[in-house]
Image 1 (cartoon, rainbow, N blue to C red):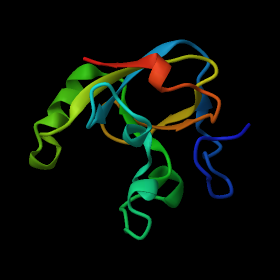
Image 2: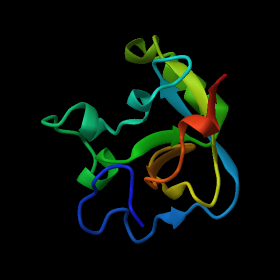
Image 3: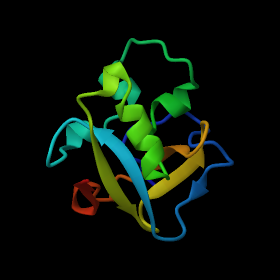
Image 4: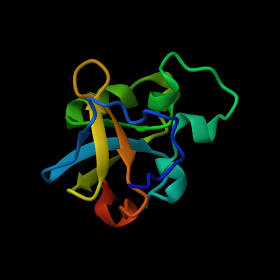
Length: 122
């Protein structure tokens, strides 16, 4: 399956799961309505930056399974200008893996999944 962004070999990791049931996740975005720019990985936004995560994770999208966790992140100084977007994932959405505390996940969307048709700002 082709992913939205080019990924390194062995990415997503073998323990990432394909989205098998409908589920909602929450992503911090800048625009309302969201644009494709709101769904770029850290690596796509900052090609030369060093991140404290694997290259695979840097090329995925950070999302939260719990709205309250996304709200907490919005209170951080560097995130205060962000909005919370609810994204409805289904079996065509890609692969996902819990990669942080609480409900933080990294999501590697399939290229054919229409993110903008499946999201709305809360």
